[in-house]
Image 1 (cartoon, rainbow, N blue to C red):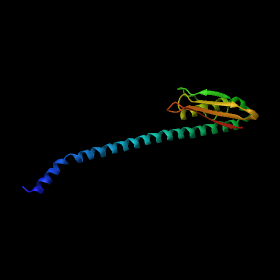
Image 2 (tube, rainbow, N blue to C red; image 1 turned 180 degrees about the vertical axis):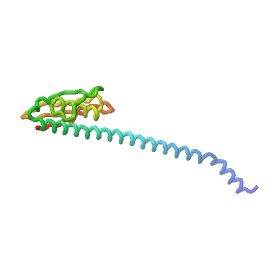
Image 3 (cartoon, rainbow, N blue to C red; image 1 turned 135 degrees about the vertical axis):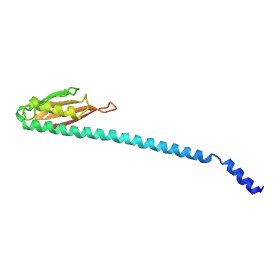
Image 4 (cartoon, rainbow, N blue to C red; image 1 turned 180 degrees about the horizontal axis):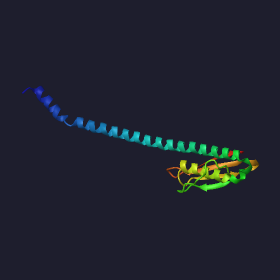
Length: 151
């Protein structure tokens, strides 16, 4: 047998299985990349939900300030503290009273915010009022957003 043919056969046997190791390393790198993409997707969903809650809180704060502006003579009747529970409050559409406005506001908060959130309206100095809305995110971090306005 030719000496060159023996060297080629010997080299092929020495490299047997090397491509399998390359494939396993490539699969490992691909798996790590896919895990990174999944983690980024999860974080994106969490940030999106936080942004959704903040936009709902903006809408709730503007809603109660508008309701108080429509009923300025009874603005002090809107001072309230409510912790949202699993029981949905009820309100009557079209009824213009402070108690019904608060019930409708709490109902909107019940629909938009997680259970355990708190919605407060307190009186401030010089006829101003503050609507403070608190909630806890998935990680248990409590966040409060306050809006001060004059009805």
